Image 1 (cartoon, each protein chain N blue to C red):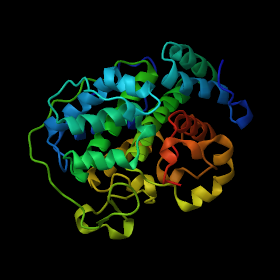
Image 2: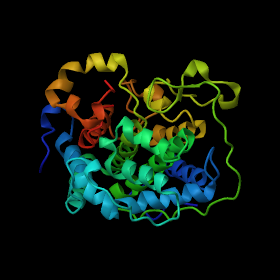
Image 3: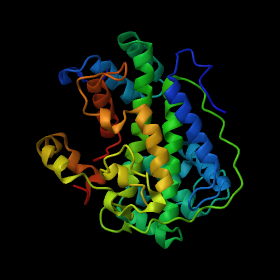
Length: 97
Length: 244
């Protein structure tokens, strides 16, 4: 299973990461990822996960197409890990942090 | 009427109801588009991933290095199709110039914002179906009527590329737009078209969490925990290279 989410300390993080990664980047593997996640978290939580994935697929489009900036407080809180994770280098970061 | 009775997994009633409301809104006239135009935008949202130009641009180092015509399925204006297709397929590389070009090419900022709202609504519902392994819903039949042409008096430039309405600038005409919301930037993003704020966050509160429960870590409101929800949301943002 791809996706190293295990260090996050979140239950089923690797399966959640694989679920998201394959949805956006490898649809042929996605049914396998979905089944794996379902086995780990159960039916109802899988439905919740599908809802979260889908709404965030939409949220990022709203944020990126309207050019809303990160709130000042969030920008300050995330300054160190944004740099570490390369988030500041995203094309969408231009003028928005 | 759309629903999830056919789903092998039980879908929460609040979620199914919200999708039904979203499809009704999609079919109705908005602030700047007729119901027919809104459903046509939805058709383009669905067509964009297979558009040859969008695929070529997505794979290019810069989307501006590739020119051509979109593979469209409607007779919407080219400037609108460009906004819908790029937002659907390559939103992470949109810049201020993209918005400016849309305005130069003939869209008003109101049309632009409403189009983004429609894209987001269709993506939220379609991606849910895709993620569940369910067939997508048929698009609704458009409802006749005239767009309201309502532009909030309190809309101001400055926060984003598009004008937005600060919570303190909401007038009677769009009262309730931020009900249940704190008015942070993502809530304000579509506020030039208040009905899109109301509509989108009607979906958000059931697919994600209501705003007042986001930080209520003492109670788990869903089977997916707060931590799992935030982890997944962050992963989706990172994959899409969204800075917000």
